[in-house]
Amino acid sequence: MNKISYKTYLNDRLKQVDFHGQLTHPLYVQVTYERKTIFFKSYYFELFSKSRYALELPDGSVKGVDMEQIIEKENEVIRFVIDKLKDGFSLEAFKKIYAYFSKDLCDVTEFDFITYLYLFFDDKKMPHMAELIKWGTLHVVTYDLIMDFKKILKEALYDELIEQAFEKAPPYLQLYSFMMHTKEWPMLCLTAMEWDNMETVRFFKEYVELHYPKLKSTTLIGQVNNWPKYRRKAF
Image (cartoon, rainbow, N blue to C red):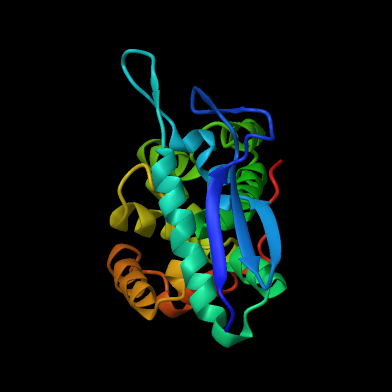
């Protein structure tokens, strides 16, 4: 196989953007193979630019993900994809496989889960709660909102919400809970690359059997495997 070279870099040809209170040029990826080069915006730069990855400190300053951590994450998935393709490498195949394995499964399952929450409370004749979910999840982490629901909702209603989600929604709640159990802030993501590892799947199975004993773990795993079919756009 011919030599493959790659690098991540701050694209100073583009305007600076706000990254958790600091101006920076967007992070890009460059891959070269057989004298041809492709350039594209870093998926993880976009992902970790989201407000859920920013922590407001008591002095009013904002702490977010370090650029070095994002670059490290990019390099990890780039190396993974190159190794995955091996002798079948091409720039077209790389871009396609990168787009698949770089995805954060919590991020891609969130929208359909929010839609489920909206419809659940709307069906319960609680339209204002439904609207709160619709607009509130633009600013707060959906998982954190659910944890507050657990504190304030009647137990029967909360249990019904979780049980119906098992039938009608992506396994966002279980994925995010598992991710929080295995990761440290601010690198709170669970990628398709990590899910491709059978050890990750095994740990997930053990985790949900312990923390969600009423739900069938093999069904949850099947729902996670179905992640490419979930919608990813926001309201």
